[in-house]
Length: 105
Image 1 (cartoon, rainbow, N blue to C red):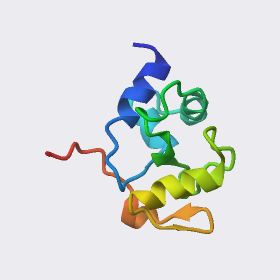
Image 2 (image 1 turned 180 degrees about the vertical axis):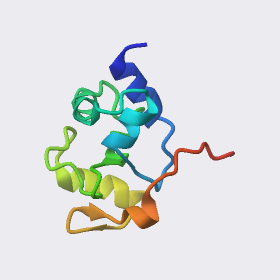
Image 3 (image 1 turned 120 degrees about the vertical axis):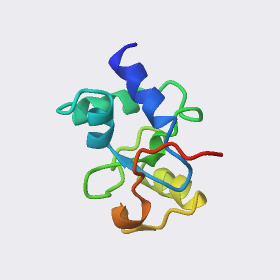
């Protein structure tokens, strides 16, 4: 599996209404110093409907100013549509950060 594929597979596990950070993804796939490369992979996401890259924020909860699939406003709308409150381009990580555990459905 390539680095990009590992990023996409991890992001597909993030549940609706939750977010993760670039660094969390990098650590989870075994590349703890590759947060920027995670961002690059998400920028080139070939299937944004399948890989919900809008659920990825920076370590402070800030949305991506150059969200590849429509900009910051689109990322905010997608998150808000899932019940995530976005205030001034930020998500409260104390509330919405996913712990990485797979939820039983």
